[in-house]
Length: 268
Image (cartoon, rainbow, N blue to C red; front, top):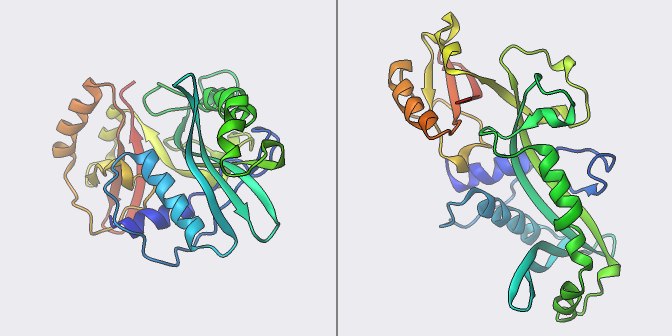
């Protein structure tokens, strides 16, 4: 995919929360249209590239101006955290601290509590863990005395800054699971596909399908016919290697040449 495709996919990925009832912070939404060509990026780390896209979005907007980005906060020469963005909203005449989160979560109905059911593809993280970190560490950092010292360089007083959360996420539910069984705590529009275990690939509907394992920077993107498609036998070898490393890849599935789907094939 091109960088423009990746930017468009980022902008079109909805916010995980539509209000502040769960995260306790007002959600920040981006408009969905990429109006300009982003510069080529040499940053192949997914999270950092998404930060570049959000910065580019601000730069192309008449409404926002970036005052500070990736602002490291230090205490006695030790970094204690970082503020993603401090921006000025020219329309509403206010300053906003925005934390960006770009995530992929799988729904595991076997877990007891609803919010706990959203877990990372490799079971190394979860939505509830991320919310806890945001609310106890990342967002309160704005009011740390060390942060006040840094913000004085920009003539910004922390108490004048509003905090918002740009939480972009794609959600994946078990194969053929009924969406209506999921409580609408999160934005259901974030559901982008399904997840399965390797043995489910032996089902008849996957036997003639073609597959592609995209790079992570393309994970937000929609699959298309121009991708390099492989047979199930070929993709199975790659899956085995990834699963032995306890990695659950995102896979594009091409059924009948015209039906494209996204899924995680988990190792667990």
